[in-house]
Amino acid sequence: MLRIDAPAKINLALHVTGQRADGYHLIESVVVFAELGDRVSVQLADRDEFVLEGLEAAALSAEATGSNLVVRARDALRDAARQSGTELPAVKIQLDKRLPVASGIGGGSADAAATLKALCALWGYEPGAEALSRIALGLGADVPMCLDGRPLIASGIGETLQSLELGFFLDLVIVNPRIAVSTPSVFSKLTSRENAPLSVPQGLGDKDQFVDWLARTRNDLEPPAQRITPEIFGCLSALRLAGATFVRMSGSGASCFGVFANASAAQAAARQMQRDKPGWFVAATRTVAAV
Image (cartoon, rainbow, N blue to C red; front, side, top):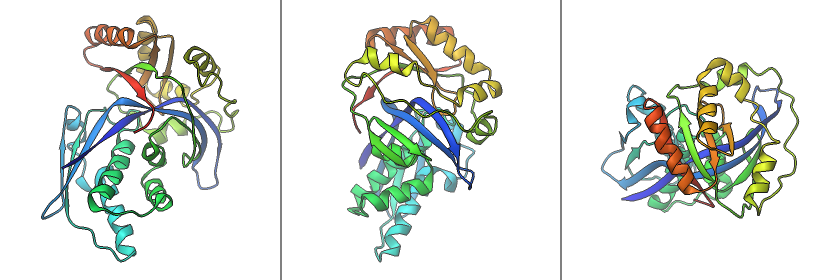
């Protein structure tokens, strides 16, 4: 059995800079990935099988199996191989779901990306980086960045990726009020779709300088998401009260994150918030350089 982690995707900043004629929004986003995440396991089998398990699996139990991005990733990769004359064998895929669903931290997209990586390794199938990126984009705008799995700046609709060489880790606490937020609904509530782009990142080798620069950036989806889900304001406030030096919503919400001085401070804050907010998803984690 081959196991691959599917790390949470954190949008440290997300600027909406326009909208294409086909309706897709143009973005510029600073993205990092966390130690916290789901896990995908694959093995050869007599027939295709998908097993959903883990602490957060119940939220997906009513979903049709064919709708899960893990299954869609398997089928898309197999279809691409078939078009090139290669038939790929049946597999059993297990998804250990640890991240809350529809939460703005890329759980489904990360699962799809991990599935693509795992199956390419298991099958010994190498479609090439460009073809694999096209398959990923066909599954969702966030899947290519999750496939890349490094600190980066994503632009376009999320498919244009520029590596960001950060010389440090960020210790984070991620909280979610366990309210699923619809990404299309949040985008539909935007008051402006033509906003200023990101400035040139500063402090890439110094955490404090970088966080100072982050404070001058935005998540343009945060105000409309708060109008839909006011509990997001409570998440941000709780993180500030717990001692975070910087707080923001990730993606289209409702997950929020706080940057803490170090791992001990993040873990202590998470323990306190777990006691104060037993109904929330709360986890301390650290960013990773690459996956």
